[in-house]
Image (tube, rainbow, N blue to C red; front, side, top):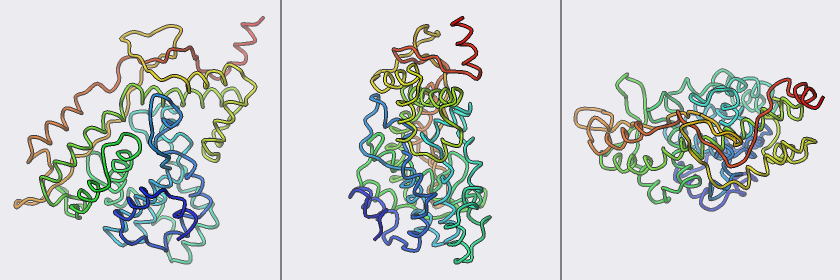
Length: 366
């Protein structure tokens, strides 16, 4: 079909065929632009691919996620503008994805890196040329939040939320097989929610219950001690490299993850490069009620990611937690688990560099 599609592994190709039995070939030209190619080198797993604390099954890029979102939107709407907005929604994603939100102090909402989207699209000759050819305006595709099928507020079900629960459950923490994804996905339609707005909804209560039962195993993994600690370490590593002058903020949005990691290893600062090597060797995250000296010790809260889908009933569309005690209990069980508020640490020392660190070091060496 094209270079991007041909390079996909067989499971992802089959997964995409579930999301849209016919791949919209008009989308391929947009996928093949340099700006979209860049995010093929950024993992959806927020840097956990590089830690022994995790066993990510295979590489699934931010481009793969973006294509998956676009395919879901296309399948349900056959609207080019909405589909492209879904494709472009992560075009501004930096390396290590939401780790950079952690670096910006935005671990709980994880939206701090979205502001570059419009500029990246506007400055792309290839994308703007394609949009002009297709009679589509920039403002119709630069913010997927204007399309409720593409994105909406947690805990509603959107194409974005639907896709990452499927793909994370295939690659990051295995809770799905393709047959189950097909069963869940084919039970979904567009319906009006309680606000009269279009939203993805399940036709059958039992299948929605099965969906909740499955993904409720995945939710805790996104806020686990090891997940938060790994992401914060990568955030602190990037911030330290920036403060030390080895990495610019623009590098985070223009280079690949492998290029950034190469900078970690090859910078002139042995403390930084050795700290990253220690991180790569660490396979355990520890927990403490108090700060632990002489360790990489942090206290980080994470974003609560979950969904409470609509289900069709004789009385209209209703949230699954209102009609299923089982689903309600599983949702509440997740909402009630601790998601931070205590210390976690690696068994090695790493003190992130703050601005002005060079002057501090010089003073210590006097």
